Length: 128
Image 1 (cartoon, rainbow, N blue to C red):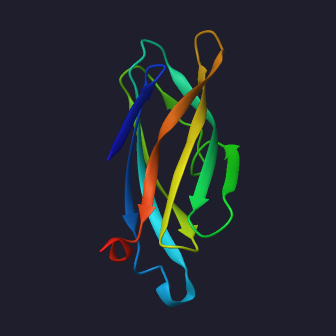
Image 2: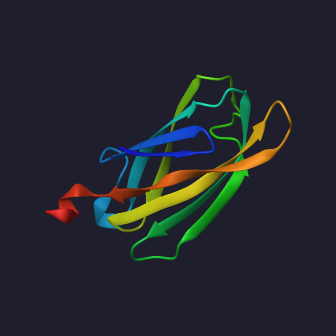
């Protein structure tokens, strides 16, 4: 698990290779990642947008951005957490993702960026 705290928001990430959804012989590798977001601030926040950089070791890197996560723009009161699971496909056995979320402080309306720790996407058989 990778964990990082930025501006009072703690982000933890766990990844999992999905052999049931992958086709290794066709260079189709699918990974799930679970993200836990915890608001340690004394004020409420709302996750507004996400920005991802996806590195695939043998192919072109991708940049993805959009509103919220998994169709939601969750509001987190002080001490609250939000967890979601999503996925990423690669054309090679090894990659990584990194990025940031843009949050809104619900007291003053200010936007701020929260870094997501870089996390690896690895097909374990390749590493042995």
